[in-house]
Image 1 (cartoon, rainbow, N blue to C red):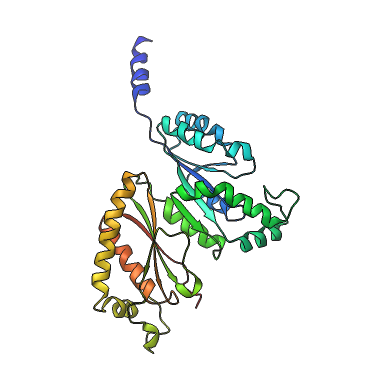
Image 2: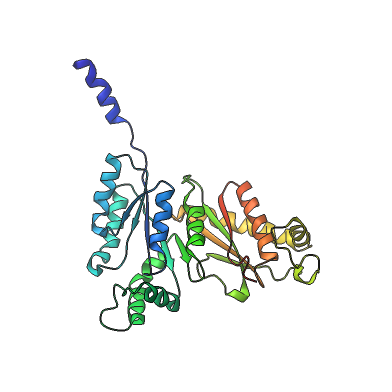
Length: 300
């Protein structure tokens, strides 16, 4: 009997694994459930619609069961509960867990269309028009959106594209690195509202005007060589990498673990894709965790 107590005490003294807590929130109809299911498929423990006041209890349960990655879907269904979120975050921090926040966004028109298609009212709609409920949600979520680690605009995104975006941002378990999403886009489709940094590569010659390159994309070796071989390309890439390296260190010091870098050209087919792919390669070589997405590929 006495010989068995020592191993038990030794096991109890072993440090528990750190918990990574991700809060999924944002506008109704912007894709919270899709994001949650994606993370669940990636092996995260998912809790849907947990009252914020129960976050500290959830952390203790996860520690007892050795859950290392936990995602919680929160919405504004209960206004009084949602107002307690800052206190819940503070309590989580006191327990040694700093929550990350994924905020999902979409335009007013798209949210209304999506909600009407499923014939469901918005949580804050009341007896008035649906658009009034959208505006109430935006006001209520404004501060949380401003401090979110990752903001994803799903206005022009289908469920498969959203799942891919979430997977790129959160599949990597290395918490010591800044996780970077490099996104190509076309200005004619609108600049992304969910980017931390936006770069314009329309100063580079456009492969669209080269007949043999026009039907190809920036993923082809020929287009990439044409774009990256321009005299101004290398200085631009070097400066961009230096900016990200400088800001990345600051992001980590301030507790921001995700960054989205958007690179745009006219249509999002040639220059932005070629540059985004090269930026992704360089940042990966610099030791960052990087995912590259091409928002407007195929929309031309």
